[in-house]
Every structure is written in structure tokens, then in C-alpha cells.
Length: 563
Image (cartoon, rainbow, N blue to C red):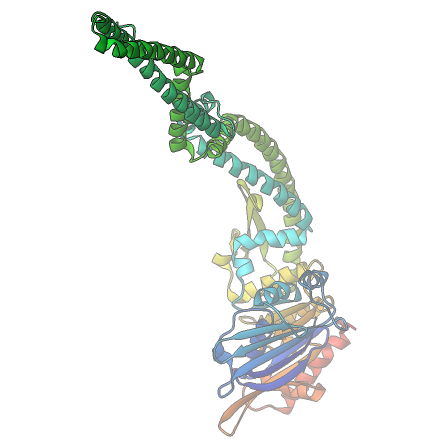
């Protein structure tokens, strides 16, 4: 519950401190006195959007501090999850709004994000104003009311978890199906690339081994070619070419023919020796040539392998390692493509199973919602009759939908406020006064289910008066048995039923406007009630009527103030 509120430099409020009791507290004051500012201050501590325009003129910042105690379990969990500790069981929320537009929030003295204030605020305070009927006017919120009334939150969570599983599988199927486009062409390309690389029989270090072998074979080839050419020059070849050995022999024979000339005898002997030496040299070179191990076919194969390797490097990577990595990636991708159809079939079977389970949970949830709706409509109608709406009739219209996060059906509350009129959507039939009373009837029906400690009603009496206003006051007093209820009102009937009463009073001094919040004692309440009822000046009769109004709840034994 809200224990205390301190406001400083907020609009026309310079400084004010309010201690809130349990039970039903009312706030009254003349029009324009600043009653809405108190609501704005509480909203600021709940993380709602603020404007620098609310900073009091001439000051640098506005500040609001709210103290809460007897915190709901949901708030305690959120504080613990976010690392905030309580001191003495109290939660102190501070909000500073600077004139330059900056805003700072603190929880128990520690900085806190505004989003956390909003998250916590939803479990601390529920504010309902005369123009804040979105829960009733928006059909999207009607399911929330039913689930709260029927204690169906756990059942809804179980359904939503199953629905979330179904959506994940459906998204996976959609992704795989989308990838099917062009899959066959891609698979064909991958198969060709895999075959091309695998046929090359690549291994780590193969490039170095082939290069070394190529260089060795080239060296052998060069030596063999030189030896072969030398042998041909010395001995000729198969084409009957004459070599140096034969030429030397021929020269010796020619000189032998003139051996009768002594002067040529020495030359003949020299040529004979030279022919023998050349023949010996030719034989030696031929033996060396024969001893060489050179295979031209092997050399051609090595060069072919190196050319193939260079071609693969241009297509799949600059090194053998990169080519082999590409091969593994291609195999994995091809495997994924080839298995995608089986994956889709498997996922479709899983989706069908999940959809069956999800649909069963949705049907069960809808059945329980229909049961809760019958009880809820009856309960709200009973509360409405007490609030002077005896002919109010409510229906819950369920409309089947595709499976969604909320279930398999939407619901919209329909009402008929007059006899003979068919129920219609609330937004098309209810007046402002009716909306306020219907909302109060709903809050009364949910009073035992609502874990929010503080309920605030801002001018819920708008559009009603007389006996209907009194019934609203009695109902608020009744709800205050389980919740702290704060109500801003212009109705004397409602104000008289409060367990405590605060006056919001505006005054002027030194050219400035000031608003203060004053707790009223019994005599102060008498004067304020008489003022509200008076059309001109407050009379003694008005005061006496006010006094009797204050005594009436106690005399009737109506909802004493909670301890």
C-alpha cells in the first residue's frame, strides 16, 4: 500500500507531505485546486511519462517521493531479480523531473531505470480515471479480466509455452522451405565441384612433392638430352648421320692412302689414335646415358598434375589446404540440402503433433473461460444492481480465431443497460457515468483476485449523483476492506463514506499560487461536505446534514476501517 507521498515544486504545489492510512480515503477541493496534481505525482513514481512543464515556475526541478509497505509478492520478486534490497520492509521510490527535461529515478536510494518503475508500478497501484476506461472499451483487455477472475493465468501460461514451441517449429519449416528454391541447381553444382576436387586425389604436401619431382625430372632430362646429342655428334644416329668417330676414321684412311709420303706418316698415326679415343669416349657417354633413370611419361604426368592443381587453386583457394576446406564445406552443404526434405518431413510431423496438443490446451482454456465468463457476468451484474443499474445485462461474446498467443477465441463484453434492448459493445452504448459504475462493478468482482495493494479512482462519480453516487461510495468502502482505496471526488455522498478525508486547497500569496493537501478532522469534514452541498453560502442546515452523513456509515455498521 501507499504509505506516504512527498511532493516538491510540482506545478502549483511547492511542498506537501501526505501520510496515507489504510481503508478508504477521499480527496476533495474546489475545481482547479490541483487534485489532479496528486494523481500526476503518483503516476510519476510509477514510471509514467512526465513533462518538464510540470516543474514549478522559477525552480530547477520537481521531486516526488512515494513510500510503499506491505508489498505484493510480484514486486518483491522484481526487486530481488534486479538486485534491490528493502530496508524495514519499505520501498521508497523517488522521481526527479528537471526543468531541462531530464528525469532521474531511484529505488531505495539507488538509481533505477524508468522501465523498472513502470513494471513495479503495475503491481503497486491501479489508477482509474473518468476518461481511463480502456480496459472496458478495448475488447483486447476483456480476456485479461476473465483470466484474472477465473484464476486462469497458469493455464494460459502453459498454453502459451506450447504455442511458442509450435511457432518455433513453424518458423523452422518456413525457413527450410524457402531454402528449397534453387536447391537442385545448387546441389548439382556442389556435386560437380566435389567430384572435381576428389578426382584430383589431393593430400596435404602434394604440391611440394610434385614440384620437387618435377624439378628433379627436368634436371635428368637436361643431362640426358646433352649426353644424347654428344653421342650423336660422336657416333651418329639411326638416320645414318656420320659422327666424329667415323669422320676421324675416314681422315685416317685418306692419309693411309698416301703413306708412301713420309711427311704425312705422323699425321696418320695421330688420326688413328684420335679415332680410337673418340670411339672410347662415345662408348663411355653412351653407357652414362643408358644408366640415367628418366621416364618422359612420368615427367608428363607430373606436369599434368601440377597444371591441374594450379587450375583448382584458381577456382577453390590459393592453397591445397584451402581447396580441401572448400571440399569439406561443399560436402556439408550438399548433405544439408539433401537432408532438408527429410528435415521438413520430420518437422511437419512434429508441428502436427504440437498443433494437436496446442489446440487441445486452447479448447480447454476457452471452455474454462466460458465457465468463468458466466460467473463473472453474474457477479458484475449483481454489483451493478447495487450501483443503481438494476436492468444491466452483460454477455460475453466469444469469436473463434486461428490459434494465437491468447488462445483460439477472442471475447468481447456486451451490455444492455435498459430493458428490451439487446446487448451491444460497451463502447457503443455506455455513457460516462455508466462506464464508471460498470468499471467499479468489475473491480468489485475482481477485488479478491486483484493483488494490487492500492486502487485510485479519479472522479469516478462523473455523470452520477444522488443515490447512485451514494452506492458508489458504499461500494468503494466495501472494496477498501481488501485494498487501500484513494478517491478524488466532487460528490458529498462519496466523500462522507471515506474512512479518512483530505482537502486539496489552493491559495495565492505574493503573486504566486500555492496548493496544499490537508488531512481533515471531523469538524473539518463537516465544513467541507457542507461546502460541496451548498449552492451559495454554507448554512447551519448544510452543516447538520453533513454531520449526519458522516455518522450514517458507523450507525449502519458499514465496512469499518481496516486495521
